[in-house]
Image (cartoon, rainbow over all chains, first blue to last red; front, side):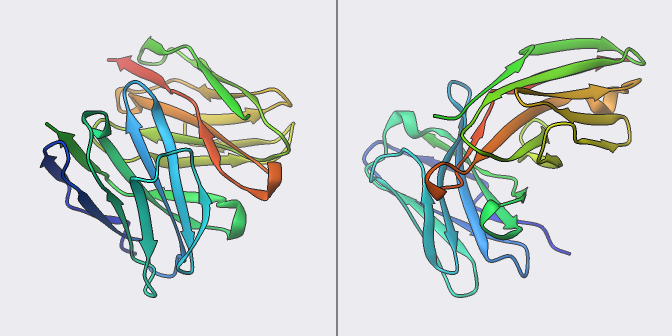
Length: 114
Length: 112
């Protein structure tokens, strides 16, 4: 069974640019969550999508957005990048209803903003 | 607001030296407490989900336990390959929004 795929794995951008990250969940999983991980703040929840609808949202500014397609693949977008957006962005494929009982994480996309 | 505090921040053990990692939490209506293992440069790997006080789960050298205020991850006779950062997370049911809250993790190094 294939795992969670995230592309690209590494990305370098400059301040003010925008970026789009992609996540393909495990086949059959309809829920995808996104997280930001930094040394200073740890793992922080961004948002969760289920059947193309945003079901939960963390406490991040509107520059962070996402969407999910009918095949469950998800993208997240960060506009007007800031230095503080440098982080590991993790996607999780969720199994187990609304409670997200089991999350399977992808390898992450390492974003560096210069 | 849900909170998770993990201790210690870092732990060094000799191979075979058993120990425990602590996860203290406050949450409105616990739906689940999760343990993950994260290796450098990789995403977290799911280990356990615990739902109610008194519950215990085991996997190889790891055993997770849960009380109403904290969870412990016991590592018995660890090996160098158990070296990783161990993350704890809780999911509450406040307002019907199941947003998980993660702790900062415990970095474990097991020396041969």
